[in-house]
Image (tube, rainbow, N blue to C red; front, side, top):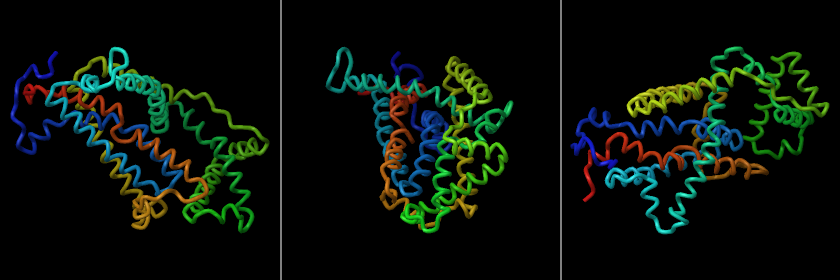
Length: 328
């Protein structure tokens, strides 16, 4: 079906409310992209690099918007989907353009990671709304890697003026102390379970990953709801749901920022922000590990490649191409 067929040309909205009524594709994309990149990859980058790479995260969120705008503009004016447009770029391998083969490989990888995303949602819900409580109880015990890290730094901190600790930048020293204190408190709260876990690591063992059901129950429920939503296939339902989610997590994010800034331990000073936007790299002996994580984060935060491809399709579903008329 020609994207320009249907309701016919409409005048662009002039009022504020008229403009708000035409929103939709961007909200759907916003509702779909805030996930593993923003909630997991960025926090991992912060844990490894501190505030030093804040500038890279912000650039990653901003730079892709301009590509998204141009792809959407092309679809609206020409009534041509993204893949159809990319297929016109010079250079073919077989029946289609080489870019489409890269897109196919990217989609295969993206589908493979959907299971992990749904599993992550299930784990979050198992913590927020436990059913049997088995998952929440299981992760109360630190992992093998965390306990090994704790024992390693406890040995260093127990010796005054340890060269390895003294050589760290001040920010890194503070983070090590905070990490040690947090894990020690977590183990103390566990009582005998914490003592047994530490002894297992000292004996050269490892903490097994327990089989839990709460996260699986929630992941299954989320998967079934998503299947029902997609099977229905109505644009209006998806837009309304996405709008509600975007509004909800926007206010939650603002609330979290205010709460963190109101807490002395987690608040950021103006000096922290200046350091975060100084276009520098993490201090320390190994700046490459956090930089590698940050570059991976750069690729998946904000509008990723999948969203750049799908955004014009939502513009067509909204009717933008019909409202502008055929290209002349």
